[in-house]
Image (cartoon, rainbow, N blue to C red):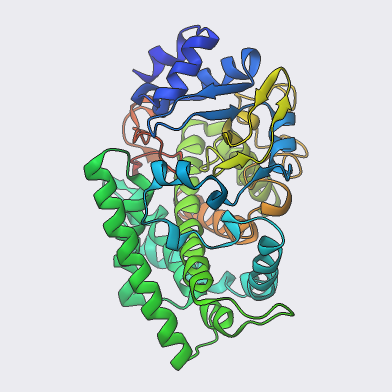
Length: 419
């Protein structure tokens, strides 16, 4: 199915229809449709399954401009009718954070979080990340098939972000299950109910956890956020819960799928795998190319136009929703020569790819994601250099839930030691 879809030439109308419908074929491999849109309709109006007209940006230069454009607001309360139609009522209490705000509020929230979520705090996690990685791999069978997604890719960043925040170990599995429901829920009445239940449970849990941190501070990030102050005061209770939520959710889901994407593509390309693990410097460079080649965050979160905006030959009307395809921008041939080829020796890729966004909303967790990726991949392939996929690469399934939050493999069956 995916191969047939990928091999056909598409018109811009067909590509836009595929992106609008978020069909299973498109979800399994969106790159051909994005290539068509980049070439023929780089600022494309869509009618996605959520029913709210949206403009999709696919070229690299346009994506950079849009990510930094203050006229494209991240404060979805300004587009509250569209917000309700897409997410319902349950998400509002969890979206009072720096991801969904504009200056000056965003500036204040980002400053408070940045003062606690420091590079020094991230680097201090290195021994713990290594320990968690080793323990997870110790539990995986070496000579029989294992799905690395649930056994390694997900528990690693989940335990790391929970360790960073101070989530007790015996409470992490439940938090992961609620987060998974939020990440993979589609549209429709039943999906909306599941989403509301999961978000409500997460909200109640975080309210309780924050109350416990107030009573018994432990030095972890969440305790630091509870007591953090700046010249504009501390985080409100709503901001605390919402900030904890976005750090927990975004802090493990995106990295989990990114590790899975990396393992899949490296196993599918033996020569690239060999080049990636010559030394730690080569591994760090390979990680950046993988972020470019198959980022787990396919599109930026929604923005809306606060005024009419002309981009290329398209008018984005005031009030319209806008999405920026990081996946499409990262494969723009005007920026990256031969973009559909993964090249772990590609020069200057860390400074140019958009996997972590750009501008005021550049991902605050980028240093942690890089640390986790380098340790996870270096340890996994160092311990199991002969690791192989079970079956052919084209048989591995990709996420096909309509309009998901992430792009990634839905399974990753491997044998760690085929010998």
